[in-house]
Length: 257
Image 1: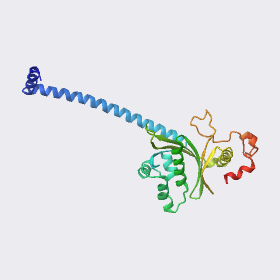
Image 2 (image 1 turned 180 degrees about the vertical axis):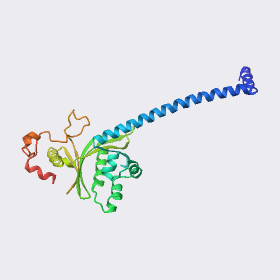
Image 3 (image 1 turned 90 degrees about the vertical axis):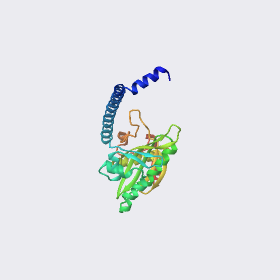
């Protein structure tokens, strides 16, 4: 330390007014930085709120069930529609507080089966999660099950998530209740099975899970299958026509049984 620095330090020490001014200036700088950080935080919070609200409105309009799971297929989050349709929760906060850190099998067991309510989806959801992890890419599924006597058909898209070191960290999923389109989709599934575009993961009466390879069109911005038959006019009400029209023949019907 030079003599000049020593003198400056001693002058500051023996002159409280100088020290006080320096402290005041430092605090003023800190206050400015804190004010800037608070403004940025408020702006980011407002943007996040608007973003989440927009996504919520969009997914609600699309009637899409959306969720995220960790590497052990335990829930991290789910959108309000998924909470309501899949687990029977009316409030999303109540839902998230309960489902976080739990698997589909545990949740369906605790929320339905322990109360003597039938729900066959738990195991097939875990099967499709495992399959998605192994595929290491976006995978489409048709999942059918029975809930309290009602037959439900879900069209599901699952995307695996990986860290920078290629370690599997979880999945993001999106599903639609396509029960009202079951006649068409089961017929379509028969076509995919016949043309080897569907992989059977599980199938028993009323309950099945198939990984499918849909024919995606560029106009389908969400890369999902069309909910109505492309060849409806050709079918004339009968979509089990001839192979040369792209439909399966009668002999292949039993492949889905």
